[in-house]
Image (cartoon, rainbow, N blue to C red; front, side, top):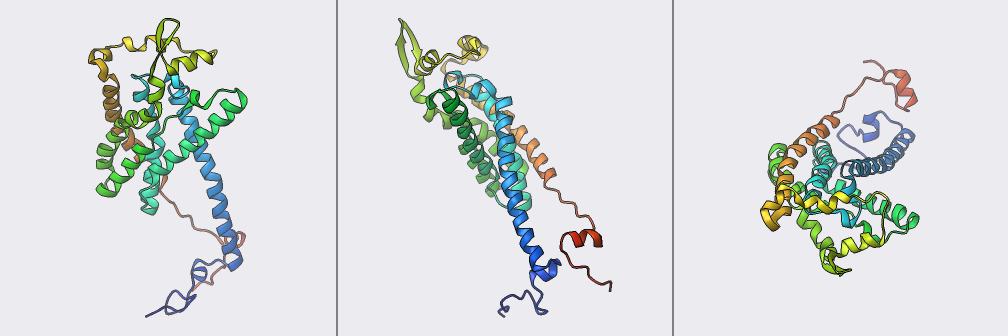
Amino acid sequence: MAIPKGKAGPKGETVISVSGLTPKAARYSRIFDFLVVAAVVPLFAGAFHLHVMLTVGDWDMYVDWKDRQYWPLVAPISMIMFPAALQAIFWVNFRLPIGATVGATVLLITTWLGRYANWWIWTGFPFTEGVPSQVIAGALLMDMALIVLRNSLFTSIVAGFAFGFVFWPSNYSALAPFYLPVEHQGMVASLADMIGYTFPRSNMPEYLRIIERGTLRTFGSSVSWVSAAFAGFICIFMHQLWWQLGRFASQTTFLKNGDVVKSFMGMKSRPAS
């Protein structure tokens, strides 16, 4: 049986009448919801961007700082935290498997805005000097795994490892041209190093020049894949930890409102039965 327009049941109760809001209060409530979203999205984007800048730091700053050993290890371990928490919030509250992708996309947009404003406008560095990392590929795998598995633990095992492991190959396509060898003053250097020589910085990390003397060099040319595999292993635990934090943040507590609070919110005081 079709329900008449504006009616929610046999008694003709609309959503507004059930909620106890007057039409004017309902309109203000919707406006307030839009204002909350408009405030939360930039706040989350800024917090995520600040988190990456403080934890990943040097390895995601400049193209000539993205080494083959520590950058594929440190960056995904740090960047999985906020997407995992946001994935839990979207899944617990709305059953939407898009939280990780939304978080990764917001991070990439915020990072590019920062690179354009801070490095191009203020300092004059070219865009090729500050190519940021992206984790959208790993975030898509996280959301896809959640759709199929529908379990946080199995999602952490499968998608957490995939997130850390695919970070290096998913970023390699954008960085491959900068790894081409060139001759500079009788020595072999990469294009990324040439850009770094052209645009010197006061905080040049000289340790990156000798960073590949570590024990991972015993694996030959597979040093990046070893780092990627270890990053995937650590991301399993990081995903589960931040999933639980996001689930905790999704808990809702309802408090009983008195007549005074209801009057401030524009709600009708119902007579006692």
